[in-house]
Image (cartoon, rainbow, N blue to C red; front, side, top):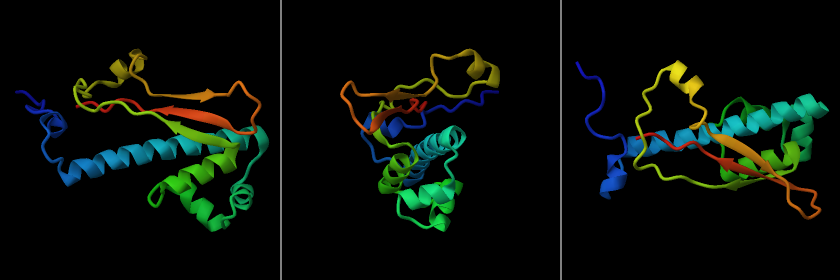
Length: 148
């Protein structure tokens, strides 16, 4: 008995067809979750490094502590401005993005052991510090390719 899909999840991209709303919503949520995980990790790192609190972050970005608490609890209401404001408030960073094609990816149905053994397919976040003196460092976020 075969349990694999007979057509690729994102076959509409390669074929030039309309992409169903459910698939678009799924992809949007994956990207939003990636941003959320990245920002929360930055916050936790800065909290450990300097003792930054949600209240301190709220003061830095001119928002109420209730708003910051809600933002750090879940990405449900995030916008691009939310990501920008949180990153600069947390660590003075700016998000510099890149993208990768969705079409042509290998299937993602892999075991936990496969994932732990394969370091070539992991997503990475790389901090880049400009050569010129600047008070703001930049962050290059490379998102993992989405398997078809």
